[in-house]
Every structure is written in structure tokens, then in C-alpha cells.
Image (cartoon, rainbow, N blue to C red; front, side, top):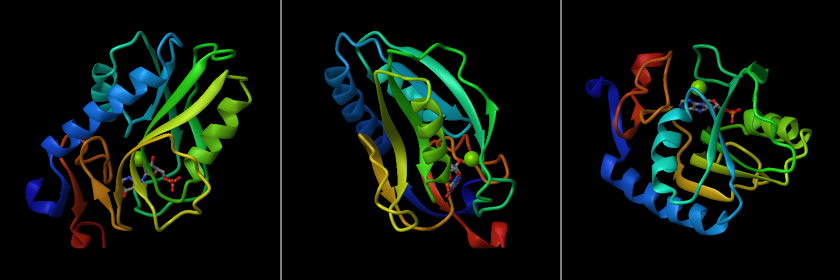
Length: 178
Ligand code: IMP
Ligand code: MG
């Protein structure tokens, strides 16, 4: 696996430091609000697992499945819910835990969908932001890192279901997918 990585962008240590920072911020902002952290499968799972343990206030967790990519590296533009949210989120504070914003299609779809369920508040906590590939209109209340327009893997992010278990975040060598 390590041999397939062109460059490490964020080390295990850098990620952990940022997660601690975000956890403290979320704990302050959501004090006495008992928020629901909704992680988007599967890429957001590793981030959720770390973020939730960096948060010191009571929370609930939930998962949603959304498919927008096949085994290719380009968004298909078609977003489909593969696992719905099973908790009643009306009048609750909701924080979406997402792996990466690329075109923003998935997140915009999820936002519209969850907004329709009348949460008290709805915010986004994203691990990675591909700043150059989407309109700057997506409001991310919490963001760990910016990344360049390359194919990124590790710490939950996959290429063709592989590399999710890499403990760091890196750029995949082009020859792997070209
Ligand atoms: P978007 O709808 O184009 O923003 O894509 C969002 C989803 O595509 C993310 O939640 C990821 O699952 C996947 N994705 C986008 N870019 C990458 C990448 O560089 N590496 C791995 N997965 C990615
Ligand atoms: Mg994915």
C-alpha cells in the first residue's frame, strides 16, 4: 500500500493534532445541545471515530450512506442514498461528518435532504476540502485540511475500496488509476 502513495500530505500525528483541536471547538460550540454526529459512509467513518473521542460533551452518532462515485476517480454527478438516517433529527442539532468535499455534489444533496427533516441546526465538519474544484458556496463550520486537486487516499478515503486503512492522508500515484 505505502508504495502506491506519491506523497504524504498529512501524517498520523498532524491529523491527531487537528482532530484534538476540532474536538475542543465542537465541545464548546455544542455544550448542552446533545448534538447528533452523522457520519457519511464509508469515507467519514475513521474521522468520526477519532472526532467523537476528542469531544467531551454528550453526543449521539448516526450513519448515512451516499453513493456518488463508482470505482472511478471522477464524480458521476449522480447521488444516491444507500443508507438512510434512522434517528428522528427534527428539533435536534445535527453535525455532518464527511471525508472530503470535491465537486460538493454529495454534500449539497445531503444538506438539502437533511434540512427537509427540520433539524434545529445543521452544520458540516469536513476532513478535507478540495478548494479548487467546487464553488466557494459550501459553508463548512469545521474543516481539518485543504487538499490540492489530486486523488487522495487514506484515513478513510479509498480508491476502489482500497487504502482506507492507511493511517495518514496521501496522494495516490497516477499510474494506479490511469
Ligand atoms: P463530491 O460529491 O464530488 O464532493 O464527492 C464527494 C465524495 O467523493 C466524497 O465523500 C468521497 O467519498 C469521494 N471523493 C472525492 N474526491 C476523492 C478523493 O480524492 N479521494 C477519495 N475519494 C474522493
Ligand atoms: Mg468514497
